[in-house]
Length: 487
Ligand code: FAD
Ligand code: NAI
Image (cartoon, rainbow, N blue to C red):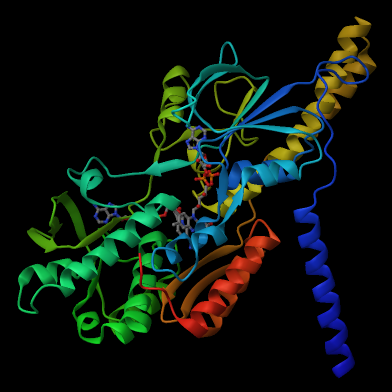
C-alpha cells in the first residue's frame, strides 16, 4: 500500500510538473503566411470575446489553418464560476484569470490579439468596426473577415428599473468584485464609527442582493460565510448586526434546480440567517433603499450595499447586428441555427455563448464551452471545404466527382449536440447542491460532501494548471488563516 501511495504521489507530481512546464514554456509557434503552399489564400477568422465560448474555441482550434484574430476589451479569460467567492476574499482575483496572450501563445499557429471592443459588424461587406480600449493610444478600424465568431457574452440586465445602474453593483467582471469588496469594507468601517442606536448604522450593515438565480444565491452565501466565519472573530458585536437579504421575484430561488434541492437551499438560508424575500419584485432603487412589490404591498428595504443579479441582456454590438438582419427578431439574443450560424448572415458569421438565443440552450459556461469545442471542429472541416472549392475553381471544371466530394465534406458538418452534465451551486456553510445528469440518469445531492464535489468539479473545469494550483492554495489559505478583512 505504501509503495502504491508513493508511486501514485510521484506520478501525480511528475504529471503536474510536466503540465506546468508546458504551460510556462510553449512550443514554437508557426507564423502565418498569407497563402498556403498550394497558393490558396489563408482565410481570416475573427473571434470576438475572450470568455468561455471564445477561449474554448481558441484552445481547440487548429490555428495553423486560418489567420486568427481575437478582439476583446478584456485581455484575460475570467473563470466566472468562482467570481462570487472573490469579493469576500475566499478566492483571490488573480487566481481566476488567465491572460489571452498565454492562451494565444500556446496555440499551434500564430494568433493576433487586439485589446479592443467590437462596435459594429457589417455582414454585407464582411467587416467589423473595432475601437481600442487604451484611450492614450486610441484607434478605430474596420477589420475584414472571412469568418466571424461572435462570443461577446451578455451584459447584466436591469429591466429598466430606475436607480439600479446608479446605485447598485453587478457581479459580472473583476472590476465589479473589487467594487463590491470596497463597498462592503467601507460600509462596515463607517458603521463601526456610529453609535449602536443610530439607525444609519443598521442601514449601513444591511447587505441586499437582488435576484435569486445562482449568481445572487452564491454571493449571498459567500457573504454570510465571511460575516460568520471571519468578521465575527474580529468585530464580534458588529457582525451580529449585519443583515444579508436576498430578494427574488418568483416564489422560489434557483429555479433551474430540482424542487428538493431548492427546499434544501432555502432551509439552509433560514438557518444561516439569510433573510429570503420571495415573491418580491424590486421596482425602484434610490441611494439608500430599494422599493419592492410583494403582493399588493409596496415595501422599502434599506441597504448599505446593494448587489444586482437579475440575469442577462444583449450587448450593444449584438443589438446592432440584430437590427441589420431582418431574420433576427428575438430580444433575448442572436438567433442561431443548429450549426451555430447566425441566422440571416449566410454562413460567414457564427455566434456562441451568452450572446445567443437558441431554445433549450441556457446561458451557462457549460454551453458556451461545448459550443467552442464544436466550432473548432467545424472550422477544421470548413477549411477542407474551402480548399476543395479553391482547387475546383483552379481546375475550372464541373467534374461531378469533385462536386460529390464537396457535398460529402459539407454533409460531414453535423448539428451541435449539447451534453448537459447538470448544475452545481454553492449555498454557504460549506454546503453545495448538485443536480447532475449522466446520460438519461439524474443524480441529486446536497450538503458537505457535495461541497467537496463542487470544489473538485470547479478545479477540473479550470482553463490552466496555474489556475488550479492558485485556487487550491486560496482554499487552503482560507482554511488555515481565514479571509483578509482589509480593502
Ligand atoms: P463571457 O464569458 O461573458 O465572455 C464574453 C467576452 O466578450 C468577454 O471576454 C468580454 O470582455 C468580451 N466582450 C464584451 N464586449 C465585447 C465587444 N464589444 N467586443 C469584443 N469582445 C467583447 N455558468 C456555469 O455553467 N456554471 C457556473 O458555475 C457559472 N457561474 C457563474 C457565476 C457568475 C458570477 C456569472 C456572472 C456567470 C456564471 N456562469 C456560470 C455563466 C457563465 O459565466 C456564462 O454563461 C459564460 O461566461 C458565457 O460565456 P461567453 O463566452 O458567452 O461570455
Ligand atoms: P438568472 O437569470 O439565473 O436569475 C435572475 C433572478 O432574478 C431570477 O430568478 C428572477 O426571477 C430574478 N429577478 C428578476 N428581476 C427581479 C426583480 N426586479 N426583483 C427581484 N428579483 C428579480 O441570473 P443569474 O443568477 O445572474 O445567472 C445568469 C446565468 O448564469 C444563468 O443562466 C445561470 O444559470 C448562469 N449561472 C450559473 C451558475 C451555476 O451554475 N452555479 C452560477 C451563476 C450563474
